[in-house]
Image 1 (spheres, one colour):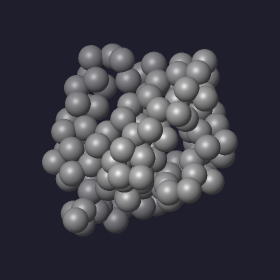
Image 2: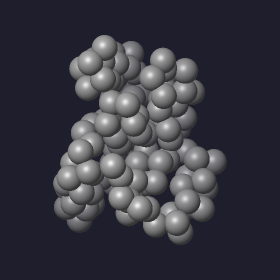
Image 3: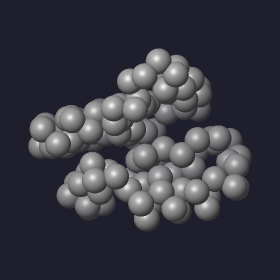
Image 4: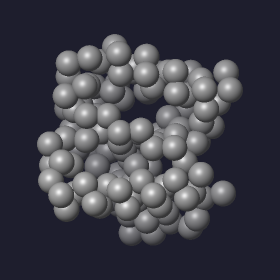
Amino acid sequence: MLPKYNKDLIRFAKALRKDMTKEERHLWYDFLRDYPIKFYRQKVLGKYIADFYCAKANLVIELDGSQHYDPENMANDLTRTKYLNELGLSVVRITNKDINDNFYGVCEYIDKIVKTQYNV
């Protein structure tokens, strides 16, 4: 069961949904939105907002741009991933470069993980 979430994050999550990155829009509109197992975008999970979340597969998908590779952000991502793992969620990180250069491979990868996690 997910912990209570910070209600102040809901407003921010809604704003993020309206202002998704190019890669987030591509993954959402061209794959996850119509995926047979429900995904949510910019979902508040405890004290964080996940880029994409699938409750049935206990899966969080995070898209990482270049800013995620500086030491401070890498440490923050590690803390965030640990927190989400402690909630029983698997976290998959996908680079924006992978979305742009290998979109269909990314979709197959996500599909395989969901089917494994969901036991389909």
